[in-house]
Image (cartoon, rainbow, N blue to C red; front, top):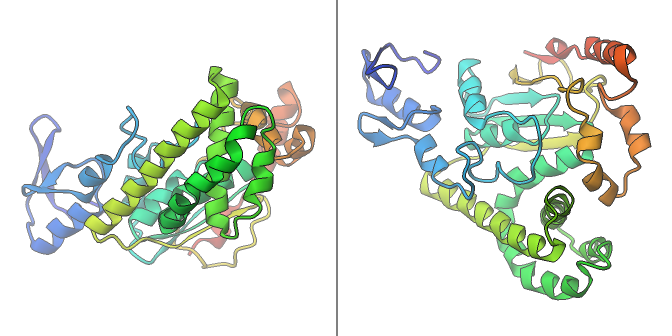
Length: 310
C-alpha cells in the first residue's frame, strides 16, 4: 500500500496479486520492497541483497552483522518502515538513537539520506564502518598485509600498540574499519574466551568479505547510495533546525532492561573511556531501582523529536 499497490493477499499470506499492474509499479516494488522475493517473476533487490550474507542469521546480511550489539532492529523491518512513512530517494531520515547503524545502512541502500546521533562512541563507530567502508575497500585491502605484519608480534601481549599503528592511517574511514575489527576481537575474547590473534584475523577477513559483498551488490543492482551523517550526540540536545528532515525512525533505549555501558564495557575501556564518567551521559543507566526509572523518564521527556520533523 505504501508503494501504491492495490493488491489481494493469496496462498495463505505467501503471495499477493496486483490489481493495478504497471511497469512503474512493478519496478518500484522490485527496487524498494522488503521481504518479497519476486514480482511478476522478477527477483526483488531485497532478495539479491540478502544473498550477500556471511552469517547464519537472515537479519545479518551485508555489513549488518559486524559487532555483536544487543537490542538491534531487524533490518527488514526498517526497510519496510522507510517505505511506510513515505520516504523517497533523496529524502532525509533522522535517528536520535542510532545504535548499531541498522537504520543508517537500510536508508543508504534505498538512496535515502541519513542523519544519526548516539551518545556512545562505540555505536557511532559501528554505524560509520557499516556504511562508509564500501567507499574505501580498495585502501582497506591495500593496507591489510602491512598492518598485520606490524601488529602480529604485539596482538596478544601488547594490544594497545594497535592504536599507535593506526594513527599513521590518514583516511579516517579506513582507520575506523581496523579499529572496529580490533574491538570485535576484543569482544570475542571477553565474551567467548577466544584467542585474540586468531579472532582478529578471522573477523578481519569476514569484515573485508562483507564490505566487498556490499560493493558488488551495489554495482550489480546499480544502487545509488544515500549520504550518511553519523555523529556522537545527545538526543536531549538535538541541534538540527526545524523542517530539516523528512522522517524519523527510532526506538528508545532499553536501558531499564539493558545496561549499555556494562554490556560493552570491554570495548569502551579498550577505546580509552572511563566507564564511571561515560555512564553519566547515557540515558537510563544512572541510578538504581525507582530512581533509575525516574531519571530515565525525565530524560525521555526532553527528547522532543517532533520539533525538527517536516
